[in-house]
Length: 332
Image (cartoon, rainbow, N blue to C red; front, side):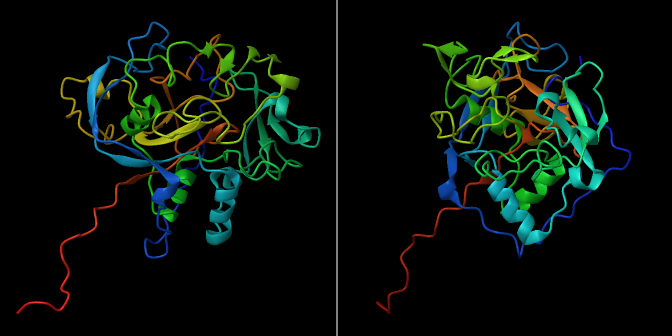
């Protein structure tokens, strides 16, 4: 099935970004991260809404050690700071183009469209000059959207940013445990009902996909990273808005193979040409894929970029300080 929310991309030349020198990388800031406690949770879903071939099930017990996760996705402002400090050139910039949702392509960018549509997903346009700082192509800007999630970032871009701030990308198991917020077996990160009391919990497609948006004013696109209430772990927008890169290589069967490794802090298969993405985006809709369900998953190549792909960072819990009595000049 074509991927509505992340068009498959095969670049002619793969780009590998050098990671920042650990000596010059920034140190992660625990105060801006949520603590996800150590423990076992039920990962996956046997939901009849699961997409064949995605490998969501079976439901299995997985133990994840305690870790830290960004309260929100990395914003345009944060990524701009990284670029200013390091001179990082994103994959979209190196390749010269990226995918933009067709209705968002502005008048000044139309002449920069190099591909009318993607097979099976005609709502995408490949736009020359589309990048993190010009999300809809030439003539667009992130000014006024500094608190929106950065988009048009590849897995390689996300990994480079994470290394610069002294963090890392979350594993897929970490991501799902965090998204569930301590709940058990729910379809969505907030419960089993998509809309409760007329209230939406995520920035997903409302209306008829992809032709008509029923959001106020017909607005389409990202919203601020903290728009919706946080879950029990203090995490915002773990569904919808933008897809989030995970560290794991993709496999639909690795976790159920006869020789599957232990289910304690799994990190996915050792090899693979694609990387896992989680959470869905502002384009996800029940009529096509409903991948904003908490167990839903998809993939793309490490250098793939689009106008609805972002990320958040994880970090190991810092070691406890040594609180043993210090020498105060007494005794002896």
